[in-house]
Image 1: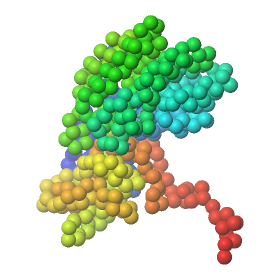
Image 2 (image 1 turned 30 degrees about the vertical axis):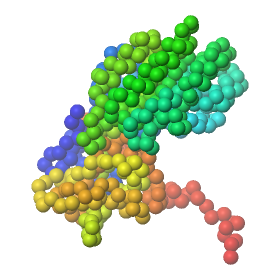
Image 3 (image 1 turned 120 degrees about the vertical axis):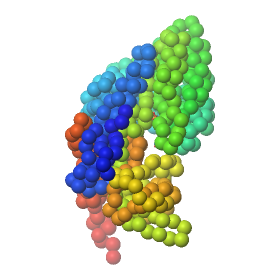
Image 4 (image 1 turned 180 degrees about the vertical axis):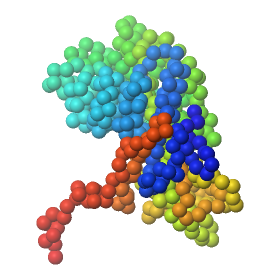
Length: 420
Ligand code: LLP
């Protein structure tokens, strides 16, 4: 997988010159290699020696073009909002390959999911289950349900993206989940036959997965002892990628543990990877606006801000940055910051790079997941453009927003105009 590489002072993405793209379009913008996404999906799929439905976690990158690429490979989607469901339908994902997760599903979102006959809703509370029952009754529909359990396992990842500890808001306690499976056994509207678990994201060791799956396995055996109640296992996502010399999980090792659990329990499998399918496909191209020194720091102020790439500010995440030029030169230490009026708008501190100049193109690596999907228009900065490359050709997959578009949704009402 080497679709993003240097050639003669330029960066090529599937053969397309990033330098030329920067002549055509103002920076900053995201650019993705579709081949990388396809290769990642195939590699993961092929490592699984068993049949599993791969439902791509839309939150990682919800662009409908990306959903389309993945659906062409056979993927379904995992959605957590009405918006993500609408996007999946727009990209023509087969509803029977859509799983709906999330702790706070809205009434409208559930109604849409039921009307569109999606595969499964993973519920996270008893109240939610009661609401879904009411809706299915009114709409005269049946719905397949998964119960998301909280296995109380620490995924050993950043605390803000850990979801499986007992203090986290996600999932239902195993004891309560066992009761729910029994109580809903003969429900007229709901097929409560799924068990789901997702312990966190950017997980770089197999151990937390093993521990969580072991708990799940014990639970299924207990519930299915006399009658097969649980037939579907949704094992969530969470596989991490290499951002900064991180050791990563080998797909084959992961595949082995999930094969074992699904064979032992004789259940159908759903997997919900997000990050690892798309992260490495994306770069964020940016330009040096100014170089500024103070007593402690040598700042490179770039035109991308924390509104465009939030992960460093929110999780202290590291995204490698490099110059497109990649030539030899005097090494200097730079603290790379954006234009936003917050100190949190710092991407990397004291990074050694060849001497930078005003106007120079830089790019962040591994930003295909949770990059554009977490953008905002903070500081009234328009949400930026997204481009995709496929076999030597590029195309815009999201236009840059405009300030006038932002303002067009606002108004100064007469009650405010009247204020003296
Ligand atoms: N399934 C469920 C129920 C989830 O909550 C998530 C992610 C996934 C699947 C996909 O997980 P993945 O394979 O991408 O790790 N914004 C954070 C990541 C938040 C992940 C939230 N849930 C970041 O930038 O690191």
